[in-house]
Length: 76
Figure 1 (cartoon, helix red, strand yellow):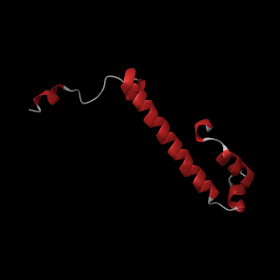
Figure 2: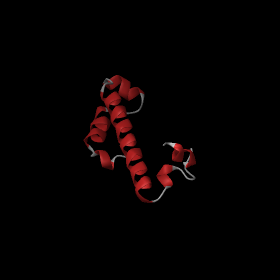
Figure 3: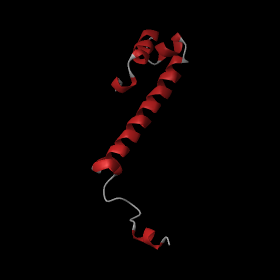
Figure 4: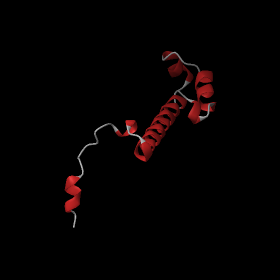
């Protein structure tokens, strides 16, 4: 019944995000969402720091607030 699954390659010939069509589109969307979630985690971590800690890493509270105010799809 599942014998046909043996013919499916274990790996795609190209990375999924470089694939064309629906698979490539889905892979790129998942990568974008993963990037946005990581940026959110990083911004949350920065927001939890006090002003002295931010200054230690070369940032100000205004820098963090400006970054947080940008729409997630426009963040680098």
